[in-house]
Every structure is written in C-alpha cells, then in structure tokens.
Image (cartoon, rainbow, N blue to C red; front, side, top):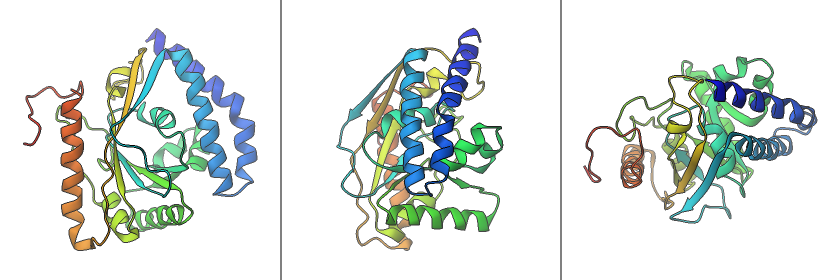
Length: 251
C-alpha cells in the first residue's frame, strides 16, 4: 500500500507537470492534437516507469506494422495495461478504444478524452459512433488499439471471450490485425485493488500480423476465433502468471 501511494503521487505529479501541454494540444484538433497527447503520454510513462522501478521490454516475434495502419488487439488484465501501451507503441500513431466512464475522473478525465476513442457498450448508438471514429482514425493512417475482451479477464484462463468489434472493424476497413500480448501487468497491479502496485518487469510481445484481405463480414467469427487461439497459445507459451488451471496450447 505504501508503494502504491508513492506511485500514485508520481502519477499525478507528472500529469500536472504535462497538463499545460495537453491544453495546447486541445486547440490543435483531433488528429494533430491527439498525436501530441500520445507523445506526452509516452513521456509521462517513461518518467513514471523509472520512478516506479518498472523495467519494460518489447519482444518482437514479428515486427510491428508501421508502414500502414493496423488494428492492434491486446489482452486486458490490469489498470496498468494502458501505461504499458505507452511503452509498447513507440513508433506509430495510435488511438486506444477506452471505456467512457473513465472520462468522469476529475482532471485525468480531460486528458483521457483527448487521448482515446471512448465507447459506451450500454448504448448501440454510442457503439456505432465509436466505430465511426475508429474508421476515421484508420483513414488518417492512425492505428487503433482494442482490448477485444472488453474488460479485465478475472478468470484463471489465458483469455476471456472476445467481442466482435475489433474483427468487424478490421474486415470492414480491410485493415490487418496484429495481436500484442501484455504479460506482467497482472503482477505489477492486480485488477482487484489499485493498492497492489509493486516494482518489477514489464513485457509486451508482438505476434505475427493477420491479414484480412478478401474476408467478408460473414467471416467475423472465424477471424475472431483465429486471433483468440493465436493469443491463447502465446500467453501459455510465455507462462502468463494468472493462468492457474492446467491449459495446453492448441486445446
């Protein structure tokens, strides 16, 4: 708990330090301003990770897609996943699909709204609006980052079930999918409590891109299952620490 309070102080202090630049970005528009906000968030993460004693490393089983936009999908197990995104995606412009309720957090909510495409899954109209914004980002050569599980995986299986959205978006826009594994945030901050932070390693793994050329919306389920199994096997291979029950790759 003492470390978590210290980490929170660092988090807020760096946010306040960078906040004037976020105000400037607000007046630069959704594209240029949004890109600046992500540059600031990467700096924020760089400073915080040093102060927190987080040692991050990207593992490249495949090179990240950079010459064209991609739909990046990742597994979601912790509040710490988003800061890790800032260490993972360094070279490409991105937008993360995030929960709308996070925008209600005082001060942080303003920055959050500039950085993410917000989704309210309780409203069909809101989901459609989010999908439209994601398509617009892809048209501007900005990759999108989506957690297809929708929320934290609180099971002891590698993944919980996926929603269709990321895969429908990829097919509709004919944009390749690249899975990314987040391996250590479960240990750095457990989803059950924000007072569970501790220093240590942090790893992200880029897996092989999956092309969607020629796929139709009738094949959303097939694509979703393919990506699910690729990510499941990867998490088992890297022995993700939340996997408690015996699971064998390929099952």
